Length: 230
Ligand code: HEM
Image (cartoon, rainbow, N blue to C red):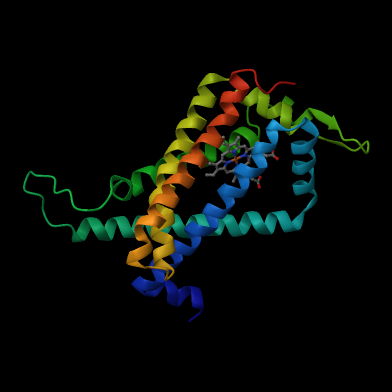
C-alpha cells in the first residue's frame, strides 16, 4: 500500500494529513496576503508579479494542482472527522454541554464551510473574471515595455463594489477565526505538543490571525475609501 493510502487508513495518519494539508493551505493564504499587499505599492509591482506567476506556465499548474489536492484532502478528512465526532457524541438531554473546548474549535466545520463557499466565488471573480470580460483586456506597460494584464485596475474595480468588498471582509474574518484554532491544532498534531507552550502558541496564533484579518480587510477598505486609486 502506498504511503498516502496507509496514512488514510489509521486515525493518527488522518490527523497528520489534516494538519499537514492545513499548514500547506495556511502557507498559501499567508503568501497570498503578502502578494496582495502590493496593491499599496505603484501598480507596476503587482502587475509585474502577476505576470511573473503566469510566466511560470507548467510549474504554476503543478503548484495549483498540489494546492487543490491539499484542499480536497483537508475537506474530505474534515467531513469524516465531523461525522465521527457526531456519532461518538453522547445524547444531549436538552442541555448543551459546553466543555473546555474553545468556541473556535467547536465551530471549525461551520467556519470551514464558509471558506469553502468563498473559494469558488473568489476564483470566478478574479481568476475567471466571470461577468467582467473587460478585466482580461485591461493591459499595463511595464518599465521594460512589456505589456501585461492590469491586475491592479481589476482589483480597484472589483473592490469598488461595496457588497463584494463586504463579502471579502466577512470571508477573511471567518477564515482568520478558522485559522486561530487550526494553526494551534496542526502544530500540536505534527508533534510539537508541549503543555508549557500551549498558552504561548495560542496567544501567538490569535495575534497572527488578527493581523491576517486586519491586513486583508485593509485591501477592500482602502479601495472603497479612495486611498488606493488609478
Ligand atoms: C482580501 C483578500 C483577498 C484578495 C484581495 C485576493 C486577491 C486575489 C486576486 C487579485 C487574484 C487573481 C490574481 C490574478 O488574476 O493574477 C486571486 C487569486 C486567488 N486567490 Fe485570492 N484574494 C484574497 C483572499 C483569498 C483567500 C482568503 C483565499 C483562500 C481561501 C484566496 C485564494 C485564491 C486562489 C486559490 C487564487 C487563484 C490563484 C491562481 O490562479 O493560481 N484568496 N486573489
